[in-house]
Amino acid sequence: MKPWYDWLLDALAGLRTESKLQDLSSGPLSAATSITGSFDLPTFSQSRQEADDQIRATMVAFMRASVGDAYVYAAEIDDADADPKAGDCSEYMEAMHHRGGLSYPDGSVSQKAFKRAREVARPRPGDVFFLGPNARGIPHTGMYEGDSLCIHALGGKGVVRWSIAEVEGHPRFEGWWRHPDLSWPEQDRV
Image (cartoon, rainbow, N blue to C red):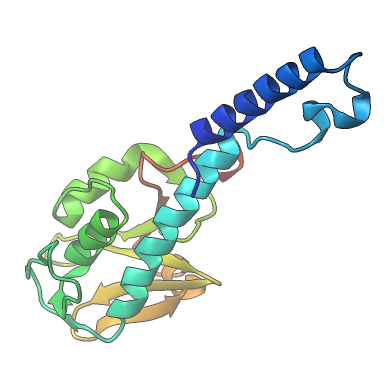
């Protein structure tokens, strides 16, 4: 993916070339050859969205590859492990974010506190959900995969897929949250 500043440098180089051509010609350049009509530069928000989409794709790919792995409470997932085989819900969410190049705390309680300010009304792939504390006082977390599906590490079942209806219909469902380093357009906010 080309960074936004490379687009700017290309445009400036094109303007400089046009300026040199104009100096060499007998008259001004015609409107048909003007650089302003030759191509469109991406806006900052387009560049940001492309970067976000790549991060989200990486996170979702990691979780898709983890479906079927074992659930082991408090098992740590090493960032160097390309294909972990066990972890709990918060470890998978931490590893998922790290694979996307984002910092993310350990443990579902810390993760919930970290995300609290970025609640979203409608999730995008890579956004997380939280279920309130269970009988032992521990919250649960998972992620939205896209296409109305969610992936999470569920005790006794391993890493599984649930429909968004199952997640949102759960009696302890508390909402969707987005990492602070990902864009948060107005239409997504609660």
